[in-house]
Length: 355
Image 1: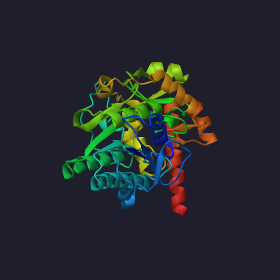
Image 2: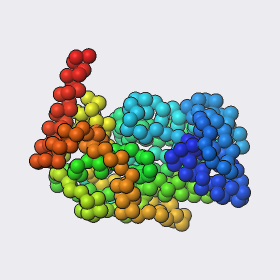
Image 3: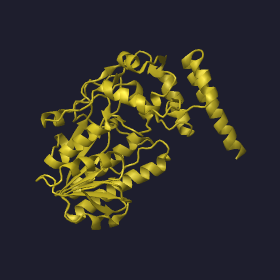
Image 4: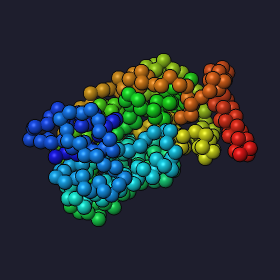
């Protein structure tokens, strides 16, 4: 039996739907959907559970493969609360699986763990080292989850754990740093460096998880990457998006983001901003050799991202007010971005002082 946490929504729901369509086959005789609420999915067995509650162990009887998708990637969740949920959920899933005798667990993190850097090879191999990141951003969440996986493998040798790392995700209803980046008046670039873009559609992630769950696909060190093939240049992205870019120096971009993030004005951490201006392109070798192909190309995913945008203007992850949009659309974009950040910081500090 294959069980999926977070089955009521998002990638978990897509995966359960795919598995349910195959229900009755030798590979997936039964699909178990785990969430803290029911959903309108047929052909599955529901087991209600909180993935952060150790009582999850009682809901895993007879499970052969447990796919964990019940994480929080929302920009609206406070970073400390999000980190607490994501790490505790992963730890509970791993511990409960080992205690109940589940042979295999699949966790989802992201290619952000490789880090984005101007000198990254394109593409990066799956076994490239992770960066050390303990920031409040999602990269820090993923790094801590993967550290948990390494400890779980040592503590529970009989438990096989596969880590699936998708490229930046695109799908209906996903409000991410990536989607907000393409909701900006212009695209931020760093002087002297060329960006390469790679995306992952949620449908392709669900397909990859299905293959890993049913056929035990696993790369070196238990890592599998998921993304559209190849990458797009900055010029190609601007042409598809119908957008222009503005260029700033690295010191200005990262220095401003560091201060704004520390003041809790923008959800973007410095390490996360790097993924919007420096390349982090992966080679999905394990899946490709297993016969998997992405349904969507990078251009198609970008087109979908533009359709899925909320319509609210944003800059480096921070949604803008009407006056800020007017300022940014006028004059020198780099100076406008700095002015917006400074003005926002001043307003924040004044409000805090009055409080």
